[in-house]
Amino acid sequence: MKRFTSLQTIPEIQTIEGSFRPHYEYQWPADLPSHCEICGNEFRVSENLQFGPKRSSVILKKISLLSILASTATLLLVVAPVAMLNFNNSYIDIGITLIAVLACFVFMAAPVLFFISIFSPDIRHLNCNKCSWNRDYRLQKTQLKLSK
Image 1 (cartoon, rainbow, N blue to C red):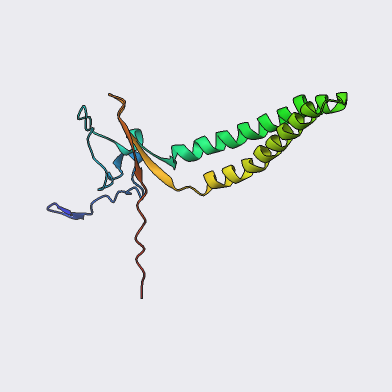
Image 2 (tube, rainbow, N blue to C red):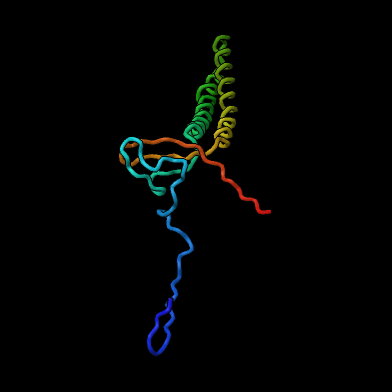
């Protein structure tokens, strides 16, 4: 828009518009509730919505780490010292053999649990900061627009 005066035409000053939207202006996903079901608090993308792995995959990663540590500790602190003492009792030998086999089995199962946790799908975690309500939702597949 131009301003007119009696003597000349003054052009309007051009401003530079931002090419990105701030994080607090992102639109809320249409498939998620926009308000808390318990207290009615309005959700915001930057405060209430998080993306990440399922809780089960986080638990599987922790279990795989603990199983490696437990099986290594069992082999080093129980099986190796008792095997070095060389008892002549067959019951002790059978028991130590079973403990060693079980520890090796747990040690071999840990990477399998870890890879299962890696390939589990990600989720959207929605939580209310006022009343501590939370729920997990599946990620929606993005619809690709193919140009012809």
